[in-house]
Amino acid sequence: MAKYLLLKHYRGAPAPVNDVPMDKWTPDEIEEHIQFMTDFAARLESTGEFIDGQAVSPDGVWVRSDGEGRPPVTDGPFAETKDLIAGWMVIDVDSYERALELAGELSAAPGAGGKPIHEWLELRPFLAAPPTVAE
Amino acid sequence: MDEVELRALVPRVLSVLVRRGADFATAEDAVQEALIRALSTWEGGRPSDPTAWLITVAWRAFLDMTRSDTARRAREVRFDTEPLADAVPSADDTLRLYFLCAHPDLTPSSAVALTLRAVGGLTTRQIAQAYLVPESSMAQRISRAKRTVARVGLDQPGDVSTVMRVLYLVFNEGYSGDVDLAAEAIRLTRQLTALVDLAEVDGLLALMLLHHGRRRSRRRPDGRIVPLAEQDRGQWDTEVIAEGVAILQAALARDQLGEYQAQAAIAALHADAQRFDETDWVQIVEWYDVLLRFADTPIVRLNRAVAVGEADGAPAGLAALAEVADHVLRRDAVAAYLHEKNGELELAARLYADAARNAPNLAERDHQTRQAARVNQLLRHER
Image (cartoon, rainbow over all chains, first blue to last red; front, side, top):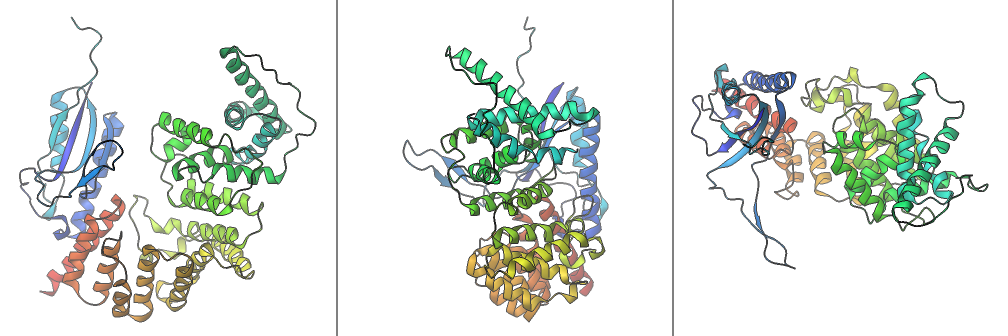
């Protein structure tokens, strides 16, 4: 088994095929999309491949230490940030091919006009613990 | 005896151990162990005196823990196995236990966790599941909290307002898991009303009951938010609401007004209306003005703006909203609602989309996205 991170971006990914912002969809199209996402996660839970799924707010700041005894420095948020993560799903699957297959299905969630969005998702393998048998 | 009845015995059992000279932290662990043992062995039938059973088992567990502990430290400390004759806890002990678990030195999340375990009798695993954190983290949070209050003991007076804040947090920020945290908060608040004679504590219980009675209508089974105007009032639990109203009326009659009573009064006015358009918004605005005297917060002002918009029309609501600072959470959502009511659909659609972007949780984000889509659809039909 190997764990993979499926990353969804607010910004930074290439434009999806069906590129209409969600608030311009019809209410029914939104319903269909949310149902798809719920069903997708539920199906992965039933196959034992679902680990975690979270969404994060677009508002964030950069933080760094400013030395001992001083409060940390914050900067941003930057409206021009090129890459902005929207959320993720962590899956635990048997093969890279399976991870690709699932990411493909998720990317085809229905959007405007009830047609698949075909959005770009980023697929990143976890760096796992070293195996017991090393030679 | 079900699990909730069993957990109701926990404060008394813990108090007995502490009165016998056990330190709070170890005693609390011992009670937890007795509780877990009771849950697994009482299935065939409960003992004739459950409290005595729990005390005996917890005391033994305490002695075992202390002995292995002392052995490790190579110290010789002896405890009498027989209980002290004068170790009779009083109702005050349970109240002091509440104070201890809500001690001002604790952070809110620690106070919540400690209260749910030491007063509520929930297991660490149940609390961890309810707040979506790993069990090991919750265990650490609880043991650190116990270390923080270790020196306080059960003999110091406390402040009931800190206890009420903790219980309100449990009620308001309960997530999921196999424990119904809202129901648990109500149980613990009800227990508190029996220990202290204060109108505000009754007001807090009324507030919880009045919201709890409406909760089935607030969400669809799939978690979707249903706005107040669209809620199916037939789903409201009229018995729970009636109890909340009765408790509130008795509290208000005592003329010791406070923020929980004011909030409960607002909830009661919503519960009074058979239909949304029968809501007495004028009185609700008056209660918001009362609430502002006790808690002048941006959230109260924001909610007041909604009520003003219903009572006196959208322009008045927007004027009230102008007093609320820009960055306040959910301000976009209220602005969108009031501008839509005012007939400014394009602005409303934009604001709903902003509200979705700034929503603090997924259910609200989805709700605001739907609102934006709905208004955009109206606009397309108009053209």
